[in-house]
Image (cartoon, rainbow over all chains, first blue to last red):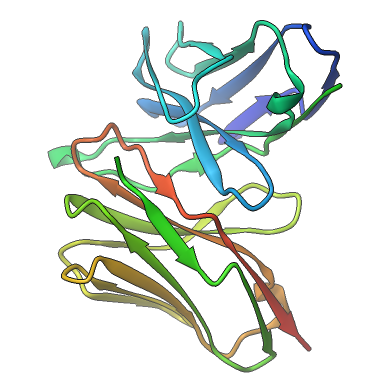
Length: 116
Length: 113
């Protein structure tokens, strides 16, 4: 089991460029999430998905889009990168339990993105 | 929405001492409270969690307590070791919320040998 993986690990973009971050999980989890982590600000939810073909906005969705065409993959896109999007991006997944209870979130290793 | 406040932001202790990190939450419907440890340059990983039907949970040197009335929960680490040095995050989520967790801003714990 690889768990949750992210591609790429590092990336430098120029303002206005676009890119896609890929998250993959092999645990058959229903729910997946994208967070950004900035110094001193914890983890903030960008977008999330409760199943294949569904996505929803989180706390800080502006400037990002997502897609979940396959259950195991969750893509995060930046259409026109801005310096304010310089951050470390973490993907996470979790499985649902009977009765609607939730388990821990399993995180990927992160992608460090710098926008110049 | 949910708001989670975490204190202190930094904590320095001597090896062997205890460390306590506190979090408060605003949504009384929250019912799941995990704690994650993040070592430098690594991903957050769950170290302990507690559900709202339990007041305390222990796992070796780590314990978490929950006070639903006051809406706060705490992480207790006893007999600290240098390898406990990391950033610790608390989080809160509720049953009907797509598993979304609201995270505190983190506490940087330094254990001095």
